Image 1: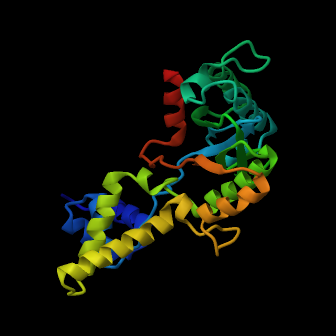
Image 2 (image 1 turned 30 degrees about the horizontal axis):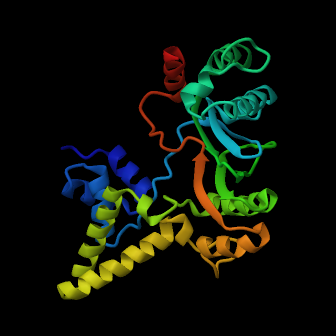
Length: 308
């Protein structure tokens, strides 16, 4: 397989490794990007990345909440200039409010009635393309709810109330004070924004990801020349460290690094007045998971709008 300069650049962007190292890794793995990243890590050339995703879209993340539920939505535009437009911001704000009345799926939000338009959310966004002058699309939506307790929202670097480039939801279930639960949940949401955990519990970590990490840890340990029994212990220790890095409840709490999030929750129960449990979180960053393609984003959004 021919290794192109574009492939080398993409691997460098993903891993932070040098150009020549990236080229060698791609040659060793027949151009398989993920395998090449693993090859670099095994050689100690690159660190693990969480694949936050290269942004291939502009627009805004919007959040909305009520007593026991909250949502985040992503509405995309072609340029950041439009994201600063008051009319566009109003659309995102209203889409978030509409999402609260649905199950939170992007299909349900898109089909729901947009306030004051007599049309659906998707139809209203299409109409706005003509007035704002840029292609737009509803890309994602997520909702969390609890039977009792609170769901807090946090928008990082907000450009307006509940609008920004990164939105987080954190749900806490409790029969205690909803206000105290919401206040602590907001602190956890700020933590999630900063620490970007992959899962709530260790059990929620994708099995394939865990096995991949174990394989990398084992190869690194064996390279040190240690016997198998020692290698096994080293891998166990690295897995525990991995959990501390990517599992929300095991992470050091950003607000108080002397405590894990789990321990901080236990301490917060005194203020809440009853046992409390974090039941879920959502972290939505603008454009994450969208790989850049040869076609421009305007064509991508236009194609998505045409299918709606």
